[in-house]
Image (cartoon, rainbow over the protein chains, first blue to last red):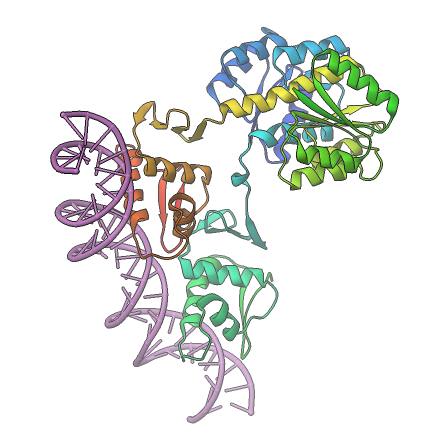
Length: 225
Length: 225
DNA sequence: TTCGTGATTTCACCTGATTTTAACCTCTCT
DNA sequence: AGAGAGGTTAAAATCAGGTGAAATCACGAA
């Protein structure tokens, strides 16, 4: 999620930038209205945070200008003055919400989330399984370990998903055969062993900590440590 | 414009109702959460104003309940308690804005206008889907990539729309068959493959960055990169 | 109605990737 | 050492997806 902050007080700007980045937002900061306008026109932000009192072009005018350019990004206005007239003026200029300085960071966060909720597509929500530093992205059908993308085939993916959903629990070959391969009787095959081997090469090789463990005579277990 | 006010204090309720009616809003008042819920479910309001402290079902629970019924009408929460925790709880329950009592009527008005504007805007901009430099114009029934117009047939359009609405997510052939072709059982056809091929020729050929990806054994995914 | 055009679907073939088999290897425990 | 359990590897079998051409369908024009 990308946010533009237009704010000229260096302290406040960096406080907000850091705080939002900790919440894994992408943050651009502009120190005056003109730079803010250029950034807003050339990027697509999810929300714009606008201080009313900034050099070159004030918040009201900037908001109006963006709206007239047909930019519909939600705008959150910040102001030091708490009078109602300012709030009304802000809304009239095209702001979607208003926050009076000084504010608590948690409230800024809550309001940003509420504003962005509308525009963000629900399909973009992550759908992840995690065990230690291994994640399985159920949307993209891909695994990641230590940030590195690991491509999996359909069967590999299904097997890893089953192991991850049963983390820290020993699953027998019979369970795996039924749930992943839909085999309900003993065929004397060793596909499962072969696929565990495939997974190990992709998921555990190159990493000091192994996640896939063999429990002799019982089955396999995916577990940290 | 229709507004539902859920408020149990008779004085405040009638003050708000009269004030809003003077601004030519249509106003319904509910004196407890249960009545409010029934009204909200059976009418279509532009905004709902919700006091946190009302009998039968409080504001948070009511907001949550409406959201779970998939009602997306903007909600403005009213509360006597100004603490931040309440605000955050309100937003988490699904509120879009928050106002602390006592408030000035003008501020209520400004916030209501801002909230209702938001839905109108989003409904107007709902005619364009974008992924990377690919746009799908739902009004014109046309796609554009890098500014170039791409004409699509009805089925091509429906398929691309489905892929774009599920961007960055692998969609299976079964999903596609059901949502785009309305086929609910396996017919052994390969129309989907053929149509993906058609789309690739129009959307990805001639462009260095491909957007349509095959995930073997799982389906297709539309994604940047 | 018939015709013609473009849209949609089917079919057959091809290629490369995935899945499975099977033979052989390694380790551990007795 | 030998048996049993699991690991590894390569090759074979199978499958999934891409593609062009042809068949069929839908629909408006003559």
